[in-house]
Amino acid sequence: MTGNRMNAHFKTILVGYDGSQTSENALEMGLSIASALDSKVEVLSVVQPPEPATSVELHAVIDSAKQHYEKALSRVADAANGNGIKIETNIVVGHPAEQIIKRAEQSHADLIVLGRRGISKFEKLVMGSISERVLTYAPCPVLVTK
Image (tube, rainbow, N blue to C red; front, side, top):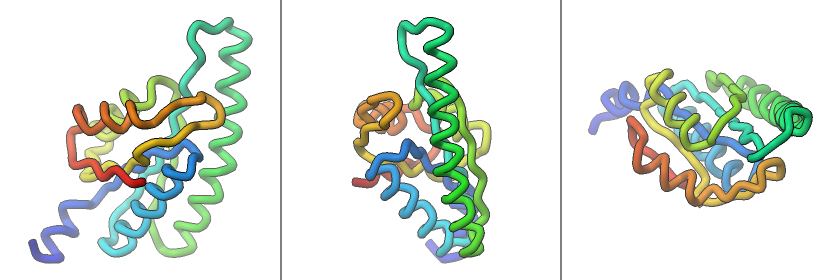
């Protein structure tokens, strides 16, 4: 595959980010690929609400997680922009795998980059099952990092 064809193929790279070390590695990989191919990066953080949850607990968890992700993603966006990488960050609420797949479809992502396994401090979420589900149902290629 020539550089131009590959470049056209990976115009939008979606990175799943939960703040874990493996998601940091995935983000680094996504940014590196984007830099080499002049691609746009979308970083998606998903807040998974506790189940079952009271309304007060639900809002508290979501607000706390959103604040955490906003700080982290602001730092990421500043660094990417400083390196000339086009980046967009989003925080959504729902099941991580479903939201990543949905966002990939909406943004016509050409590649999804995820950490293989990681534990989010807010959701206590094991990413192994999420990366497996995304691999199964994603509308585009998926790169899973360690």
